[in-house]
Every structure is written in C-alpha cells, then in structure tokens.
Image 1 (tube, helix red, strand yellow):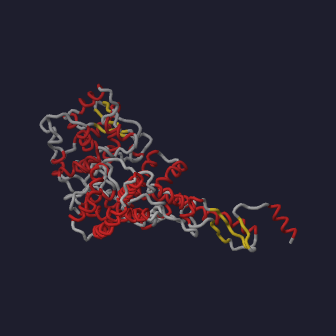
Image 2: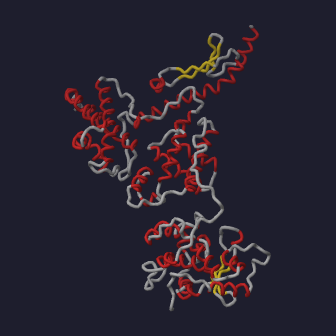
Image 3: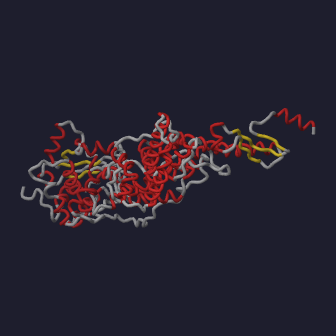
Length: 570
C-alpha cells in the first residue's frame, strides 16, 4: 500500500482531479463574477470510479461539461450587461427591427432612463408607490389584448411612436400590426416595472423572464455539448468558412442563409438551441418567400416580405423547390454538420429536412410561345420602331432566330460575328450547357439583318465593346450565371406586364419556338442538330465547310413565326 501511494505521488497531482473518500471527482472552480448565475462556488462531477487511471480517462469529458456550464454563464453575463444600466442598446435609424430587437431596445432604454433619474437625485419613490398599481393593471390589459385602441395608445403608444419616428417600425395606429406591437411593448414595460421594484428594494436588477428578453440558453451539465454551443450561427460561420475554403460565391450564399434563418427565427439563436422544428419552420417560410424579395420589399425581413407579398392582390412568384433545397437548406445543413463533427452540438437538426418535389421525368418542362404570345412580345412599346433597340430587345430577337441558350447569347463576342462563305454567321464558343454545343456556327437570319444587326455590331465595335451584349456579359461574368439578368427580367417582369401567365412559358421557350419552327419547315434532322447544338461530336466538327453553311443558311431562312411582324415589308 505504501509503494502504491509512493507511485501515485511520483505521478504528481492531476489538475481538477480530486479524490474524496476513495472515489474520484472532477472539480472546477467557478469564477467570482459567475457564481451568482451558476449558483455555486465550485462544480463537482462524480467520476464513479476508485481507479486513478480510469478516472484520468473520464476526466476530460467531465471537464468539458463543466466548462460548458461556465461558457453559458459567461454568455448570460455578457447579455445581462446590456441591461445593467451602463449603456443603451442602439440600433441604426431607418432599419426595421425584429420583435426581439424592439423588446431589447425598449427594455434597455427604460432602465437607462431610470438609472439617470436615480443618479441625478430626481427619483420620486412616493409618486411611484402611488401610481404603479394602476400602471401595472393598465399594462396588463394592453398586454392581454383586452384594452381598446384608445387605452393602448394612452398607456404604451408613446413607446411605439419612438420606434416609428426612428424608422425602426412601420405600424399605423389601430392596425393589427400596431396592436401587436402595443401588446409586446406593454409586456416588456411590465418587466421594466419589476426591475424598478428590485431597485426600490435595493436588491439590484433581477433577470427578465419574458421570452423576447431571454438570454443565451444555459447548457445543462449533463448535455454532451462544448462551450461553443452558446454561439450563434453568425459567430460560428467565420471559422467554418476559413476551414472549408470554398468559393466567394459559396461563402456569400452561406452568409445569406444564416441571415435569413435568423430572420425567420426572430433572433440569432445559439446553435445548441436550434431544433429540427426550427429548421422545418425555416423550410416552410422559404416556400412562401417571394423571388428576389430583397429588391421587391426593400428593408424588410423574410417574415415581413412574406406577409407583404401575401397581402398583395397579385402575389409575386415564390421560391422554386430546387432553390430552397439546393441554395438554402443545402447551405444550412453542412454548417450544422460541421458543428456536430466538432462536438459543438450533439446532432444535426437540419438532417433530412428538405422540400419534397415531383420526380423529374427527364422531359423539358417548357412550352412554346403561341402566335398570340409572340405578337405581344415583339410589339410596341418594347419594340417601338422609332427607338433604337437595346440589349433586351436584341436578346429576344437573337434567342428567337438563332435558338441560342441564354448563357450562349450573353457570351457572344463581336469577333465571332464574321462572314463565312459569303454568309454572316455567329460562332458560339463560350461555356455552354453541354460539350456537344461548345462550338457551332449559326447563320444570321435576314430578319435580324433588316432590323439593324450589322449596324449594332459596327456601333459596338466603334465604342470599344468586346461582346454583342456588353452589359449582360459584364453583370453575369463574375458569377458565371448567364441565365440571370435579361432572362430574369423577362420571366419575372415582362411576362406579367404582357399577361402571359403560364409558368412553363419562359425566356428559354424562345429556343423551343426555334426548334419547333425548324421542324415545321421540314429542315433535315442533321441540320437541326447542328443549329441547335445537339449534334454528336465527330472528328470533323471543328471544321466549317461551305456545304453545311449554305444548307444551314437555307434552313434558317425557312423560319416563319405566326404573330411576328417586325421587319415585314422592309
């Protein structure tokens, strides 16, 4: 026994490992500032073993849980400091605030004002004793929703006016939104009155109990979560992106996803508090979110944009299933997965959450534009003959008479518009949908020539431009997403203005009209494939011969579109 004790002494004491009555424990001292929050001076965890070597193996896990408790206490202390009366929580003017931000701002402002009054010696305790009972009852009626508008305005309307004046809220008196803010702020004002009672008794400030003022969630000592579980997604994200080393575009999408998730939750939740139900809520809200909502509803959060869109007589188009799954949920899942792999959270709440969609049957789900649609698209005021055509007009014409995809059109270089075998042609050679369409030649239709195609090329060359669609190319080149800009303008704005409601008729449908018109004109299949970029690659595909060019020119000139009247009679 003596030899055993000597060997232990030689090993030396292990920090935080304590033997008590033969059993081993993990012991961690609680710093003085955290003791009121934790409620203890020391944290003890029984390791349930009398074997020192086994206790040494169990110690790290026990310490991790104890340190998680301290980390949560530090987060609580940090958030509590904003309500200590030392500094006011400030928000930028003209910035719309979430419900939680409104609650925190009002709570901190009121306590700051109370502090200044007490410190200046102007506090009237007798007057407050006389008024607080009636004040509390009035606030309770407003918070419960039983008070009429006049009473709500008299009791708490002043608080709403402060936020409205600063541009932090948009609510007109008497509206449901206004009453909701009144109820919320009345409940927060009741919390303020409780803190004043604490101060009147000389007890200092207690912690608020209202959900909107809830501090960072405490981590239970039995949870297998590290201290980082109290961090928000925004705080976790920089380390995640640094380790992942993705493209700038991917990092931007990740940041956007985190911001939108926090907006949907109404607050920046700690990752350890995020549940699968939260992720499902995020998914459901994305399904109701209008496309391009940041431009359509400027300054509004995701919930506000959804509400504003649904209130419109003709709500805007909402996000596509693929966008929700592939752009947002697919960004949230790996962030939370990284947290799980790094023992920040025990499991990934985003696992398995996605929007179910109808299986793709392999068919292109776009429709051709009808003659009536063509007549609407290629008519005034967009195609006013007295005004020179811009990029949008030429984009529609090129798509209809060349069948080029959006990505192909956006990358057309002026140098690739040249005469070949006595025929003006466009050579497609940019990044395209598939390898069979990497390079092909399309003769320019006589209608395009009659509408000033060659003059546009000459004018652009004189200005030093390099592409037929310089603005479209410049906007899309950085992101490599050429299907945006003009196609998006067409699909989301022009179609609605023209009254074309069919969702299967989009910018890409002009290519379908092109292929349909070739087929109806009796153009041989091998020529159709060459023009459309569907031909199988062969050793001679890189060469251009006079016979195919002549045949393709003849085929192009057979194109006729019912409803299209531009250039007729010129």
